[in-house]
Amino acid sequence: MKFIKYFLLALLIASTNSCSVYNFTGTGNIDAKTFQVGFFQNNAELIEPGIDRTFTLKLQDLIQNQTNLNLVTNSADLTYEGEIVDYRISPMTATADQRAAQNRLTVRVNVRFTNKKKETDDFEKSFSFFFDYPAEQQLIGAPLNSALEEIFDRITQDIFNESLAKW
Image 1 (cartoon, rainbow, N blue to C red):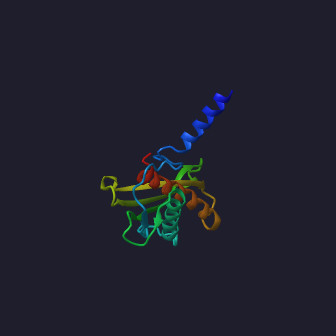
Image 2: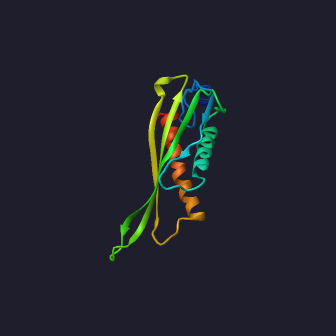
Image 3: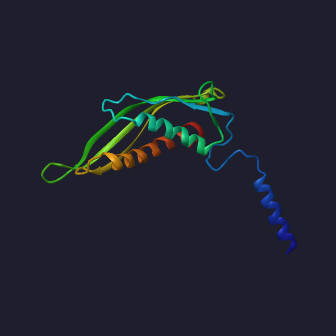
């Protein structure tokens, strides 16, 4: 019985003192210490005021909350920059009398990621996501904020996974 207790204690100590290659976010061993997120200008044909600032802050917050990297304003090890290139509302399904029953809001963001410590990780890529809603609903105020939050949650997590988690 004592042997089992010592074995479990040793196993617990070994698991907590591992080589720290992985962490709970799946970011692995990041050599970088700092990051910066440039302002993501809204260059979409259809302009929704304020989404550029909201997106930029959302990406900054996600990286700060899921890593121990420090946010800086210049000369960062990791740099995120880009622009919102598409903000589109389109009908998705129709009723029997050919009216839209459901609409889709789609946002697409172009991202340029630069890693000064490991240039092979650099990329430029578009990320997009959508939100479906009933056609009779006006997408303003709280419904719009909820839609954008869901879209930006997904896009920022996809950017994080592509740049740091390598999933």
